[in-house]
Amino acid sequence: MTFVQRIRPFRTRLMVMLAVIGPGIITANVDNDAGGITTYSVAGAHYGYTLLWMLPLVAIALIVVQEMSARLGVVTGKGLADLIRESMGVKITALIIGIVLIANLANTVSEFAGVAASMEIFGIPKYASVPVVAVLVWLLIVKGSYGRVEKIFLVASAIYLAYVASGVIAHPDWGAVAKATVTPTFHFEAGYVTIFVTAIGTTIAPWMQFYQQASIVDKGLKVADYAYERLDVIVGSLFAVFVAGFIIVACAATLNVAGARIDTAQEAAAALRPLAGAYASTLFALGLLNASVFSAAILPLSTAYVVCEAFGWELGVDRSLKEAPAFFTIYTLLIVLGAAIILLPIRSLVQAMLASQTLNGVLLPVVLIVMLRLINDKRWMGKYVNGRIFNVIAWGIVGLLILLTVILIVVSVFPGLLG
Image 1: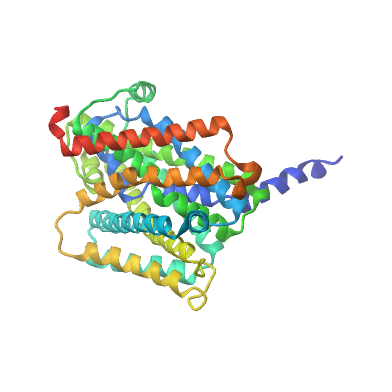
Image 2: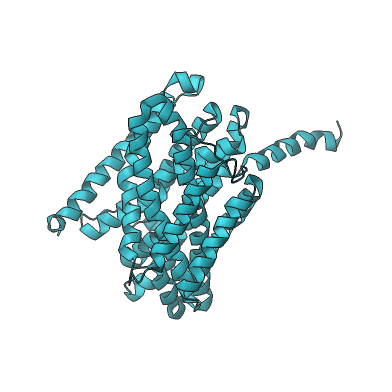
């Protein structure tokens, strides 16, 4: 057997893998959006390295959740909202749509807030930056094909490495970082519990399952592609959590050490300049801009998928405006509303950004319970239902999220209980 004959199977598998990857990596990385970056920045600045220990656990949870979403997509060939409508009826579907619409509108506003904040660091006012970005992301989806859009999104995912570089430039105490990563700590204090649950909400958000599954269906992936798509999910999830860790590290090594208090990722980028240098500050700001623009395109797209799947309307990035009018109308409305709200004379949207992430944490268990019912239904999944151990892990994640949600509600309503 010649060398070429030996490597041909490998080359074939590699080409198939490269053709399949995309939905998992894109979905996981989009969740490091403006609200997420703000959450991790505040976590690092206010609590140092103490929240790093939760990231490996979050990575496992993210992989489990997104793998179920991918499996549902490749096996059934249907989006999540479509499956909910066909298996659980109109009432539950309407409830889920309502949840996703509220959360996604809040998140879209958060993304345009991130666009405005990041561009203001470079001296560009929001009245110039937000309309331009809104038009660009609208054109990207409305005029682009799925393949072209996916390639652009994958490039945007790679730009998140700016946060890794920013964290390295901050010169953290790597010994302290390693120790905090493997040493669980928890404080029953309102601010700490809130940021803890919010961090989970921003890492595993309700919209992700809908978007990833819909993009898998839109891309035309089948059961034969499952192994590669599972790898896509694992790589994307690990990379997203890796980036989140470096955001915390960058802010902990500089802002927390200096005793600085911040409320936004914009403030974090500006505060990094005198503490870690211009390069770290600029990379942090560019990362925020990239994340905000990236997510400003994805969140409305996810919403359009959900609504059109639920009502059985034509959808897909490869469709034309005439072929899928409702799909592109919903996408356009979310873009317009998200951008317009940011252009209002509102002094600060920080609390709205953090609240959108907390809302994700509160709503996520509802979506996960529905997913678990679907993925354990042999009528849909056949032999691809969850195994016993996988179910124990998945239900354990849901139970933990519900517990954290209850704690969040208690400390928010009665902050004095924890001192």
